[in-house]
Length: 200
Image (cartoon, rainbow, N blue to C red):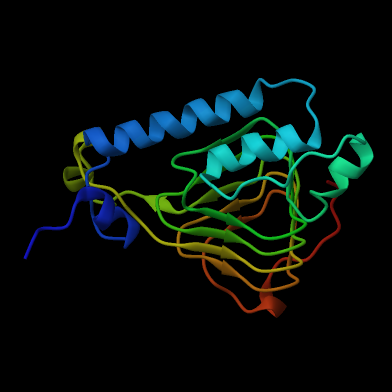
């Protein structure tokens, strides 16, 4: 039986080497897509969705354009709103539901799958990290050592305030509010999550 590739090991959360030609190329591709999105300036809703889908490698065709701008934008009513700058490692491990709003300076380390449920809102500077490193420095060994990861899942109808950081392996349940500046380190029942009012 063939040995798994480093990408296959990465996707299933095993230790893997991130600095292989395949994974370097895939990170570079995502970086270029993010740069196009982040430097596009003023753009139509259609163009925003086109550039966003390029980042997450969503190959579904866009609906045919409509001459009236308002009618054309209405075609994308359920698509996410994403404000740049936005950064991801691979893009293809990010799944975003309908009606999601992602404010500026969002960073998603999508070593493993990262899902964001429908109608969830992100304040500025939200970071989701599915990637991590060994704690033993001898094993970690800089960029020559192995990495690993765990999936991150954000439920529907959540609100993550500004500067929230979500660490690998965390699942945030439907309808949760995470206060600004929180670091979510482990799965917790909804009743134990920090609740507070904070502005987007």
